[in-house]
Image 1 (cartoon, rainbow, N blue to C red):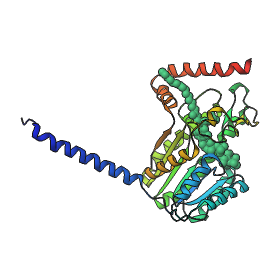
Image 2 (tube, rainbow, N blue to C red):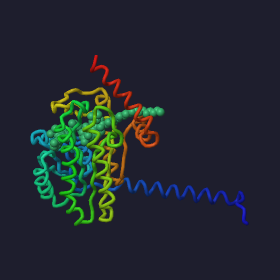
Image 3 (cartoon, rainbow, N blue to C red):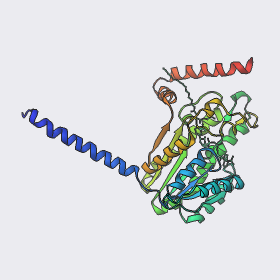
Image 4 (tube, helix red, strand yellow):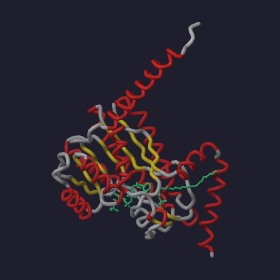
Length: 311
Ligand SMILES: NC(=O)C1=CN([C@@H]2O[C@H](COP(=O)(O)OP(=O)(O)OC[C@H]3O[C@@H](n4cnc5c(N)ncnc54)[C@H](OP(=O)(O)O)[C@@H]3O)[C@@H](O)[C@H]2O)C=CC1
Ligand SMILES: CCCCCCCCCCCCCCCC(=O)OCC(=O)COP(=O)(O)O
C-alpha cells in the first residue's frame, strides 16, 4: 500500500486551498446575481420592513410594484424613494403602486391582475405585510384569531397563488415570505400571530417542493424583533389596537439591516433564513431537541407575564 509521505502533503494542501478558493468564488458569484430591471412586488411597503425593502431593492435597480392599503402613505414612500435616487446609483426605475387590503380575498385577486399589468411579469414577490397580536387565549374572540389569519396567512397565499401561473408559464420566479422566529417557536400571549406564522412556514415549505421543477424558488425569512410599528399596530383579544411600542420592538434590529439581509436572500435564492440573536436561535433548536425544557421555559414565561396583569 502506498503511504502518503511529507512530499505528498504539499500538493494535497494546495489542492485543498484551490478547491476552497473556487468554492468562495462560486459563492460570491451567486451572491452577486443582479437585480437590475427585475420586477419585484413588495406588500406592506407603506412602513417598517416593507418600506426599507422598497428602498434597498429600488437602489439595486429593480422595477418595483409597491403594495399597501393606504394610497396616501404609499405615495409618500414613492416620493421619498424618488427623491433619494442619486446620479451615483445604478439605473433606477419609476415606481408603481397597487392599493388593496390583504384581508379581503376578492380584492387580492383583482390586485394580482393589476400587479401583472404593471410590467407584464413578476420576478420576485415579497410577501411582507403583516399584523401582530397581544392577548391571552381565554379572552380572545375567535373573530380576532380569524382576522389575523386572513392578513398574515390567507391574504399572502391568495396573492401568491394568483401570481404563480404567470411564473410557471415563464418557468421562472421567486416567492419570498417574511415570517418570524414565531413561525418556528410559539411563545405565550401571541397565539393568533404565532399560529399564522407557523401556517405560513408550512405552506411555503410545501410550495417550495412543489414548484422547484418549474424553476421557481421560495424563501422563508424568519426575523427576530425589528424596530418598526409592529407592536403599535398589533390587535388585542377584543380586536382593539394594542398601541404600545414594546421595549423588545424598540430595541430590535434596524429594519434597514434586515432589508439588506432580505436582498441577500433574494440574490442567493436562500431557502430558509433565520435573522435572530443567539437566544431565539437557541430556543428554535431547543423546541426540536428538548421540547420538554422548552415548554417549561414558556410556561414560566407565561406565569411571569401574567403576574403584573393580576397585581
Ligand atoms: N417588527 C418585528 O419585530 C418583526 C416583524 N416581522 C414581520 O415583518 C413584516 C412587516 O412588519 P413590520 O414592518 O415590522 O410592521 P409594520 O406594522 O411597520 O408594517 C406592516 C405593514 O403591513 C401592512 N398591512 C397590515 N395589514 C394589512 C392588510 N390587511 N392589507 C395590506 N397591508 C397590510 C401595513 O400597512 P398599513 O400601513 O396600511 O397598516 C404595513 O405596511 C410582518 O409580516 C411581520 O410579521 C417578523 C419578525 C419580527
Ligand atoms: C438551556 C438554555 C436555554 C435557553 C433558551 C431560552 C429561551 C428563550 C426564549 C426566547 C424567546 C424568543 C422569542 C422571540 C420572538 C421574536 O423574535 O418574535 C419576532 C416577532 O415576530 C415579533 O413580533 P411581536 O408581535 O411578538 O413583537
